[in-house]
Length: 200
Image (cartoon, one colour):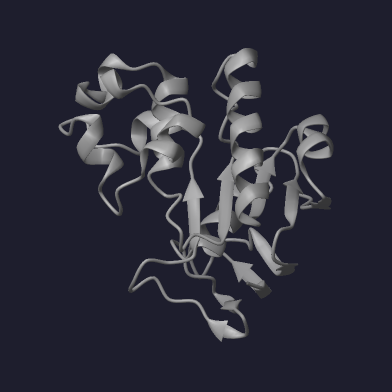
């Protein structure tokens, strides 16, 4: 699958300054592209536009040269920085995990998710454990591009390394593309096949 963001511009109101101006990016199948820049430069906004959760004021998102839609399961999926805000606190983890599709035991094992966690509430899990669920629940066979927005910034160093190792192995196995949004140049250099920079 080829992904294109073409000539993306964005501002919050008609009178506010542009946060993004004429930004274009193409991601080919299997690429891991790092999107690097300082805080406040519009990286997370660009990630939401790429995922189809925010509409640009100009430009378009294309999948294989066709405008992207989110009406059915979209091949572009996004993982957020704060997993505790991405899950329903009133749902046990099994319901959260199976919201879009039912991951098999092989995937749960790959992601290091223990069966005992399925019957817990989100508040009973650590940030790293919650993030594993947030990743696993969107790794349906139809997922072709994974947008990772500072997904391990809030986690300890050991958990960060574990999650990236698992995620990169799955991406390589599936030939899945990734867009990795980060302010961490060292991380981008380690996990990405190509790096682009957004300046403020």
